[in-house]
Image (cartoon, rainbow, N blue to C red; front, side, top):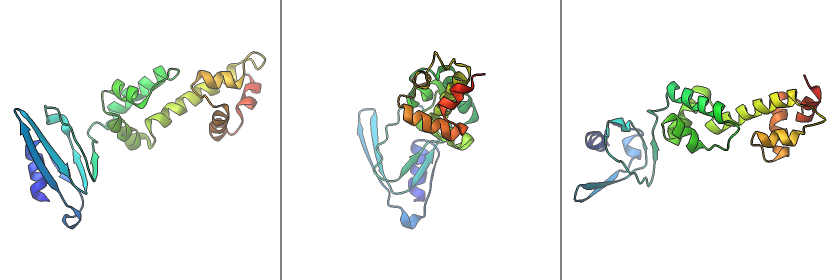
Amino acid sequence: MEATQEFLSTAYTPMRIAKSVEDARARISRRAVGELTVDRLSFGYDLAYNADSLGRVCLISLHAGTLTDRTDATSATLRKAIAFIETNAEREITLADIAAAAFVTPRALQYAFRRHLDTTPLAHLRRVRLDAAHRDLLAADPGATTVTEIAMRWGFAHPGHFAGLYRDAYRRTPSDTLRLRV
């Protein structure tokens, strides 16, 4: 196990391998064609790494175990992602869009949200949209606007699902809020 960790750390970037030696079965094979080198890793344990220092393309085929990338799960990443979500909440955006805006991988983005907010990026997006729909319901004219129109505006395509999420968050139905008009 230590030899595997040392090989990976020397050949690529500093790595830490988790789990006990008794549980691990590591296999490494290397093929080279010209300047292209392909290392195939097969193992049954967790591997954490910082790929910043690689300075080259790293394509990974993982057959067993868990590969983790936590190096970009910083509060700066989170701030960029939240700013993008808040600016673009009314648009159709995906996890990949949010990650690209924060200049990280989708997985690193998920780690950042889990580490700092104990949620996921898409759950946060849903909450931002729900808050915006709540504000719109409070400001809307009940005679001119429907709950469904507001829900659809904020990306909630299924009115029943929207009503359930809304009720969980605000302890009243969206139609009750619409009738409250501020």
